[in-house]
Image 1 (tube, protein in one colour):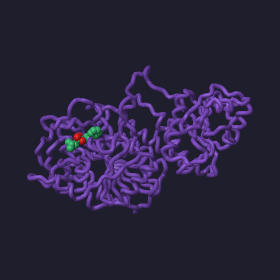
Image 2: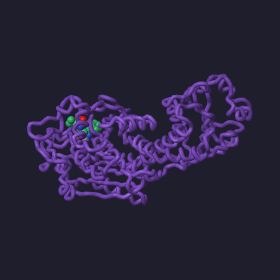
Image 3: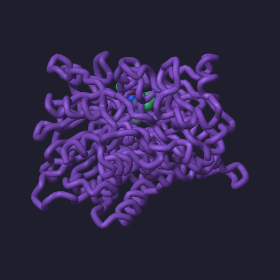
Image 4: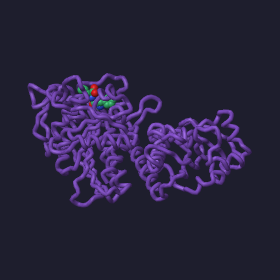
Length: 501
Ligand code: BES
Ligand code: MN
Ligand code: ZN
């Protein structure tokens, strides 16, 4: 995976801030009327500049506030940023800690220099110092990311930031803090791998491209291997349902399997199944034109699988993981599937395709049946499956549905822990009848609860194992000025695997 930053821990720097030689020093300050212990030396060397800034209320210490000091006499840093850390007496909540760290990261990047030193004071947070450094590292790697693969050389975007030395007043051992930085950075890198795949246009990022990218990723780690099935091989396996989605496309559909072997030979694997529609026109049930370009992001589930497998390999997690990617391009055309067509799934169930735009569940149905052969411990599928999940949960929270409450709980907690949240929706039996069909075993759409009925459809193929479904239609991409892949839910999935290691 591409490391964009050199991150390291140097606990000595926290002891004497004034001695840190750097282009930019980023440190912290609590809400207070006087200079904190950590800043006292700097203040006296600068003849009380910090004291003055406090009395003028320019330095307040409110969570996330930042104050820029062009040059501080007595400090070996060329410039100093002081970030507010809130009240020293109170424990920072998760959201407050993230707000503070966001400021640190924003300042580190916008400072425009290549070398930064981050020296945080001792913090009282809900989740502890390892969590703080892990999040900080993940956020640094995540924010320094730029996408310019298709830009002219002279328009390439560069973030100058290259090197960050981190310290934190803490009682936790250096070894543990170093590990936390490593884990956070690996998760950030995994998210960035996912973003890269997501951001490529549909005319480049085809099912074949994802297959080749997966093979390349596997070549970079001894513990990863990759196998790709084409249409002929899928036909032999009876995957007519998956194949029906790519029927109108000139691009060949692919079923990609990436295996990570970090556990013992017989250890049941955690299986991740990703929706990899490299462009979703809707097919014959054509989508309206507005914002249709964003349907190049319909492979973000697949991208998160590729990213997460690399995190597992990078961190050498002592478990086995299998990633399965169902990839196709959903196009109209003379060979395309039509509304009313009936296809047979690998499981034997027949499906009446009432709407060719509900294609994600069709490719996932056969991939989920295929997953059985790995005798999975659990199966989690990740898909930009429904616009309806955005109505329910907006752009900040992924939808989660599961046939196993413990698995659901584990994923919610991993999401909470990694600030990549998911929330559960029910898939009670009362919704299942919405998929009744007069012409096949099931229909591919029905009812008003779009996100839930999509999951109900998937549940028909996941009866033999513990399964959860993440609908990431709202969370896998950013909108507006930051338009692009978000790398989610790589943090959630990675944390889930770490929690099981
Ligand atoms: N890829 C879309 C879902 C989607 C919508 C993702 C918006 C990201 C943003 C999916 O294939 C789709 O078209 N779903 C339909 C289902 C409907 C036909 C039942 C939808 O949500 O409208
Ligand atoms: Mn669709
Ligand atoms: Zn789709």
